[in-house]
Image (cartoon, rainbow, N blue to C red):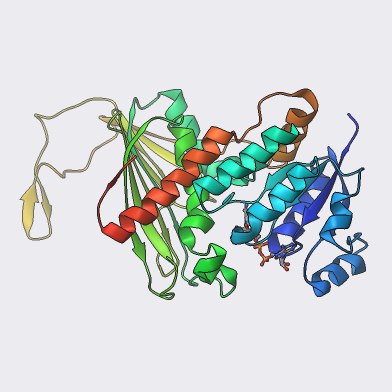
Length: 348
Ligand code: NAD
């Protein structure tokens, strides 16, 4: 297949990532970059990458079929819509934008111009999440009751636009959008009943520097998503309870551990001493009543993101991240903000 020519707008941290990884996908070639900061353009040039002198000159380049937008969250809409109106297909970094009205305008522009538009949910290729998806889909430990997904760091929020409200800063938009998307993938985009969220402001008073988000599905299944940037000891990355067992991933580098219940011996439990008391309820299990095993890390290649999107453009097939999914992910975040503000659950 002929390679697609791609330009990247915003040559910062993530723009640099795209420049490298779109080439590794083997389906794209790099036309160049555009950044509003001259020093970023100069850096690109020093690395042998063409830097467009203006955004207009990039849009006027007829050889460019796809534009990847990797700029701060508050300016996604205007840059994306200009690209769509110039007839370019667009990948926009996450969070795609900051309101549902804004997202609708972007989708309308893509539809009007007959081009593809999607957002970069690269963490659908994270192997820890994929292991949880595998455990859920295999049905090995029965119907999943709840999932807890956590990312804990201790360095606070980055001291750039991510710490400022007007630029769409904060951890819900930064990490939350990935973890929400992963949980929704695991539950197959099941119908949501309500969203409840508490935000942290430990090192930053202006935007959330962490949060705990509870999603309740109409099926009664639940998801808890937690991001912390002031946690000097991290909680496990994933915890999953199902009708016939429990799964755990302590750290994204580790394999998933599963404990499956083999026999439900309620009667012959011997009481054990714990702290200053005696308990039967919390007596540990042995390997006669349970089976413990690991789930090998699934094989994954994040370059499939570009491969699949280029295929969707060329062959007209469905894209990985659909408009409906983009809307639901964003609506969960906006509901989470509302819940954090009011202190109440928000009906979805
Ligand atoms: P950054 O601050 O490192 O880089 C942003 C760049 O955009 C800067 O060089 C800036 O000069 C440039 N810029 C700003 N406005 C512009 C405009 N109108 N036109 C052209 N250039 C402009 O930020 P970053 O970490 O690269 O984040 C960019 C986007 O990528 C954000 O939406 C962020 O949420 C997302 N991101 C995604 C991931 C991921 O894993 N998917 C990881 C990090 C960041």
